[in-house]
Image 1 (spheres, one colour):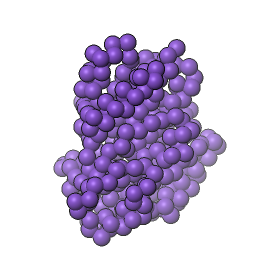
Image 2 (cartoon, helix red, strand yellow; image 1 turned 60 degrees about the horizontal axis):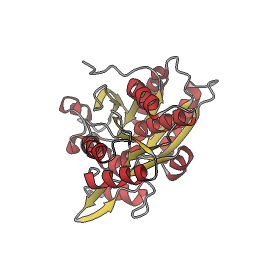
Image 3 (spheres, one colour; image 1 turned 120 degrees about the horizontal axis):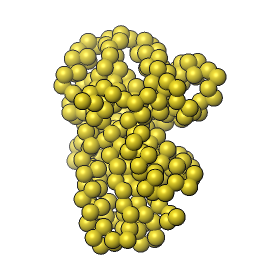
Image 4 (cartoon, one colour; image 1 turned 90 degrees about the vertical axis):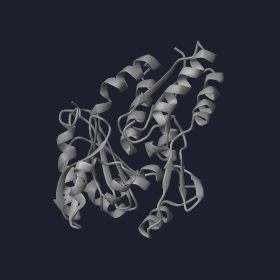
Length: 297
């Protein structure tokens, strides 16, 4: 079986240790603040996570940019020339146009390298949800699954990756156009903490509203446990936007609910691309379980 590489983008929010463990590569996006451009580096080499979120708290606005055709061409071609096939898994098309760029590059390179296999997948998820999908693809690869088998499994099961997220305010998502206008009213009161899922179309959707931070953490934990259902996949991903103490509290709540299931909990920062749209104080949990059906039709 021909070897293949798994490539994603800056929205996956997998840190260096996780990328190395699972052999996942990524093509970086970029962001701009007050005329200065930064690489959306998941290891925060140019700008620390704390500085990034402090700048947002101070009112600085970050503008994000998708992966370019030149970047995808360089990344795909590099591995094709090294003898790999390419499995590219991108941020939800409802949130970024990067995946559409990958389709165009795939089609161009297929003409140049007709023997190469290039699969491009719209994850219909972002943040650690995209990261979880990449990890699952890596696990299938490690089991000896071909690129065709892995791509088919991801396409069939990607909507079983559930997001349960709470934000300090919907203002950032609303300003960036990353949450439906119909659900924006949830953030009208300072004390309201909306619960946001990734719906079946890959869009952020404010599904519930609760009052107070602690209540929102409890509700996220409850909903995550319900999402899990009868799944046997023993991984939970927690991503936070510079609110590590709350992330630790949420981890404990989750471990209490999943007691006896020997769950592996991975926790890390929400990266700069997703962070620029959700804002500081955001907490997201991702688990593989029941299929997402909200807004499926």
